[in-house]
Image (cartoon, rainbow, N blue to C red; front, top):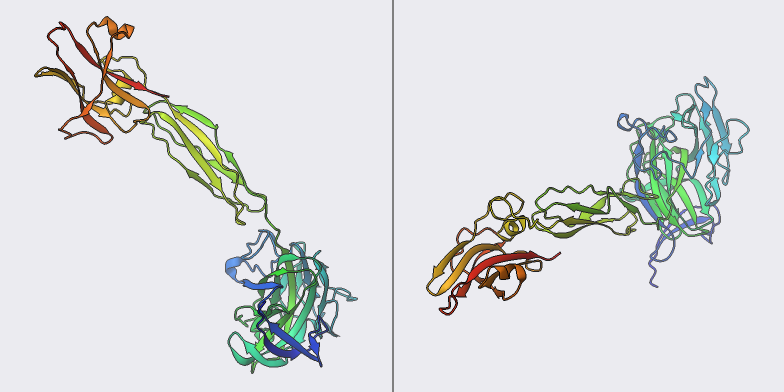
Length: 462
């Protein structure tokens, strides 16, 4: 396996997988096995989304990047050192060292936390737990109670190193480090710019692993309105990740991190299930109307799965038709195909007042009972008895139209001495409808035969 290394040396943050060498933290980016980290987007606090960041736990507020469709932090969260609203003049200012427990063990106003099941450890960087008057108002984990939001503030003083906006123009401070215990896919949200004004906000949030190097968020707005930078991580068991806050040269100071949320992405291997609306088999009359009732798909992960129908029903042509329904969920799992059978009944063979049965009307190009059709004409052409008719030709596997010759009319009923005559395409095809041909059915007139009768017969196979 070819491995390509890009190396940056950052200030040390702990000893993991041999990455500490003489007190320096080495970031290596390589191609190979290990975690994948991708930046998903930033959830901002604006009027348009009803302050979705501050309302992270309120299921009634729309979230742009939520996995569950309800709230951030469904798998776990760390809401760092909040205080009841309004705490008045009370404040928090507690210095803490490297490897702290993110304030979960604080004697007063501890961090609200629910550790994700897939983490084996999470510890904070060296800094100060802070919560001053004027800090942002956030919901608590219950989605209802309001708190003045605290933070872990870390010094942004390691650098200068490259950022997405330039070479050697950025400094970073380590906010926290965590290790996963099992192979997991999840989203992590890291909330910044919720405390004390834009001076104390990062330009970027980054997540580092030994197999990816640092993956950065987009450039953030340092405007004292909370932002949650969200990353998607596919991690192997035992992998360690470091979250850092970055500021560009000339602006570096401190940057507080207020809230960390975890949302596991469940593996989806179950296909959706398709259920027909209406019966599996439908019968309609020839020439009637048909509108399919469709089908509905349900899935154990995706709330909406689109059902794709295929096939069509031609009510002007008797036969058996199928409408097929397919569906695939967001993970690519295909549902078992479901089929509805639609039978368009054969036209009646009962003769109507105009002398034509519905079956003969169909054979002569009609698409529904009562349709006007060109009636066949008979003639004697030289020594031939001829019937000329416009005949349907677009259903050759089912419809048969032939001439039948007898010398005694009773033979039509008895079936004896009946001779079939096949039609021949006429030279004149002007004015013939689509799916039809003008055809002639001819029989020779014999002097030795005193009578000869010629008729058209239509039959339709089911």
